[in-house]
Image (cartoon, rainbow, N blue to C red; front, side):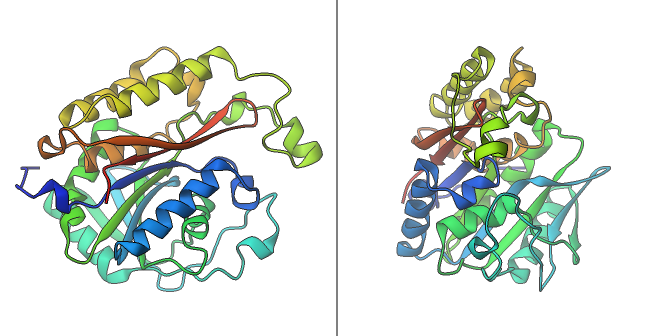
Length: 290
C-alpha cells in the first residue's frame, strides 16, 4: 500500500498487549494496572474509537472478517467470577467496521462483515481492564487462519491512516509475547487458582524468545520494525514460545500499523510484564505516545 504523508505527531499510539490466561481478568497484576493507565490516557486524549485484532478469531481461506454484530454476546470466561464481566456492556462500532471493510477491500483484501460474531475474552478482557466504566465504540478484526506474517503486516498498513483521524482511533493488538499453552505449568492454577505461582523459573527457550521479542520491537522502527517482527517466526525457539501462530499475528498487525517509513524513530515502551503459569510471558508494549 503506498504511503501517504502525515504528521507523525498527530498519530495515536498503538498497543500490543499480551492478554495471558483468562485469570488476568480476575486477578490484579502489573499488566492490569498498565492497561488501566493506557485506558485513562486514551480517554484524556479524546479517543472516540477502538480497533482491535485478537488471537481467538481467524477466518479461513483468503478472507478476513470484521465484527458487525450489533448485539454481540460474550463467550464465557473460565476461572473468573461472572461478576467481573457478565454485566459489562459491549459497544460495537458498526460505522467504523464499514470503514475498515472499505479500506481493506481497497488494499486488495477479501474483507467482509460478520454479523453473528460474539466477542471472546482476548478482546473484552482488555476493554474491561482499560475502561471499567464502559469502552468507546469498538471494532474487532479477525486474523486469517493461514497465519502469513506479511499478510497481517499489510492489514495493519492498510488501516494505518486511521491513526491520523480527527476523531481519534486507538489500535490494540491483543495476543502474547510468549504464549504456548502446551509448555505452561497449570498445576498452581488448577489446584489453588494461583496463575502467578512459580514453583520453578521459566524454561530457557521462553526466556530467550521473550528477550528476542523485546529487542525486535524496541530496537527497530519504521520498515525495520516490520522486518524484525516477521523474522521472529524464523527463530529456532519460536515454536517453543508459540506452539500455534494465533497469539503472534496481532504483533505483526501492530508492526504494520506502526512500521511505515514515517514511523522511523517511534519510541516503544515496555510498560509492564507478568510471567504466568511458569512459561507464559505477558508483556505489554506501547508504540508511540500522546
